[in-house]
Image (tube, rainbow, N blue to C red):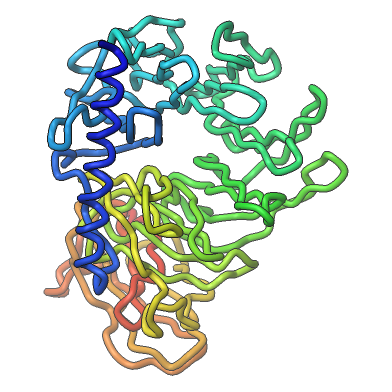
Length: 429
């Protein structure tokens, strides 16, 4: 009976993949294809497993989700109002570890039995961030406001606290090609060597650690920031088991997750202006927005596409998209036009502030002001600009030249139709 069920599930997975393959064959001219129409909500994690693709759906009605049939998405949860934030399969033992919750009494680490489709609580841990499997075992990180920790198990049977990270808000962990562990907690990045940890303080909260694919798996990148002037992507430099510094790659607003595509970094942001970027993995690397047509407000996770590699999937606030042919034509390559330094002074300001930017080539520029609802309230500049440095004053008014109220505003620089940067300014009266 169980064998027949497993064979049936494998056939379902093959059917889904075949349908995806046919869909892709007839959509070669497009860069993006939305997958799994039944998933029209946020997807914050996804993993491949023996039963197919697994999805972590947060919030009300969320949970662990996967397709039991081609068009039948089943969602398994511990409660209707609590979703998952991270999942990892243990195919050898036919189970899935799930991190549930985001600040409730039911937050914790759970084990899902694929055969019985039931959950078993491992233990309660508030504000989980991730559960993942590395070559050295399974890890679970959690916490809020420096009240958290990091758990480890070699085989998924007995989870123990790593004492060094007690009372630390552990947000991510990764392992490089040499087996070195990199752990983020708050705005600290740690390197582990035989139980000894060295660290470096970053400008702001670390959201993600990414290790490049072989043969570049000695390169470590992080996203740092949660909506401040120091939001950026960095490469972590280390030598002799110590972290020696950070190399600035690019500035992006609320960078969240990193992936890799044909020797570029793919950076997903949580921002209703611009969300997905290709980035050159080098100091002050060039940046190109690639997801502007998707209509998404956040990119939460990445995974390898089931076919047609090196294409990839991205989980967003409205479902899952498949990226194809992002660099297949000349006009889709990384552009040489990029902002050098977008800033304003004074900040906070009253009644006016000067916005400064620099471009490397003659370009068509639009500089606009937005409120926090995402509404454009004024276009400050919309014209051809020569290469070099430029300054434009904003007098704290809207398109009708009427003064706006005190508060936080966003200014957005578009270069040749692409969002190049978004920064914040504060008007105080």
